[in-house]
Image 1 (cartoon, one colour):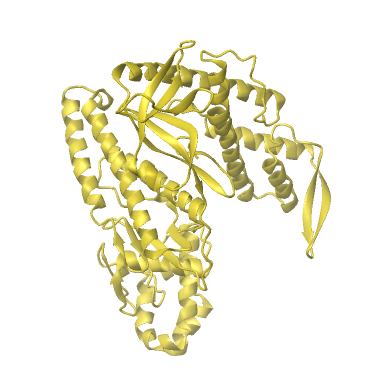
Image 2 (cartoon, rainbow, N blue to C red):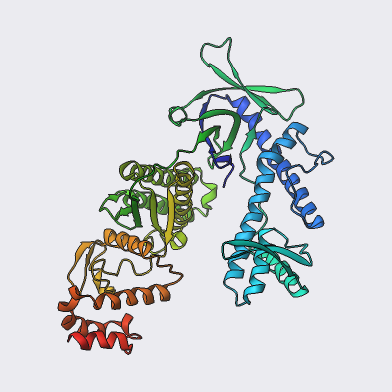
Length: 513
């Protein structure tokens, strides 16, 4: 969770940083720029102090940590604002990521059940550096809870420490380089203008110089007013990649309760090359998305070649930086716009999406490397962020499903074959002749996997489960007529090589032939 977008959240509400328009002149922008540098410098000083204390004490630091004696460049007010809104949330977020990382390592290990249980609890309680000699764990037995004490031996202590140090090696400590400048009542204040006819609101901002303040004229944007919620006195001042100063105001937004419906409204989203999102209902959203990306890619590629001839690095070119910034903003805005459109149109209670781990990697090979990186990083990040917002604000359940072989599997009979997908857009089953748009077909297979609770962890397992489902389908009366054709296809299909000797499959073929 980034502080540039969220201040904090709880069970009933979320806090969003929404755009505010400002009219600061060059002199004030220069002062803000200096303030930015000092603010980020102090943020890193405070974070290093907190981290050293955590390593030394071997205990998670609380938000009540005393940093009074810590020397910083900015005032005491700024110091506590930086700690409260920036450093502490970043520190806690880093430790929460450690818990997720270590949990996955434990889950995928070959350790015995009891050792795993002990390590799970130590990890959940953040006892990586100071594991106790014994821990109490609540165990459920026949609808009753009982507390059982487990001994933590030296091997377990070494293991949990080793797992934590492995996390530190693979995940570097956060560097607070591109952080927002967060303003609260201690360091700034929104005031209503009494004398100016042109501007109705001002932010009275404390600067790095003692007893010197600046007044930044601001006004609400249309988007800010559209988002219903309660105004707060917290502002984020952000510097984008172009060096332009942007101001956002944090608004408290009440979570909308999910309406109770007799039946769940489930939609699935498939990501494709022809359209960005395709639903199981047959909608094709973002059909011009990749065409627009190609336009940007051609411009960036051409500019890169020119810079190369001039022996210049891309980062030295303002035009290149601006073009890349426009590309990123287009990706962000278009993804958010399309997802909002899908939600408005279908009002889903559950959204099933393909796993985002390999998102876009298979569909962007035609783009230059620089554009690939932007698409993968920004595209995947923005989709996750938007889906998380839907989950928080509207209670929409987001389910990720492994998409392996969904584009090659017939939604009608379950037959999986590379040759089923005739073209990028058209799907035609070689066995039953079922025809449909390829992306719509894939999204419907995602729904099927969700309905049947098919938990897929890799390609091999996905293929195995898909073939097992197909074999089960073969025993149904409605597919009798397909067996003469199936016999020839299955012997030629490499996917079925390891299954042709299976007695069930042989019995199915022989039984109907």
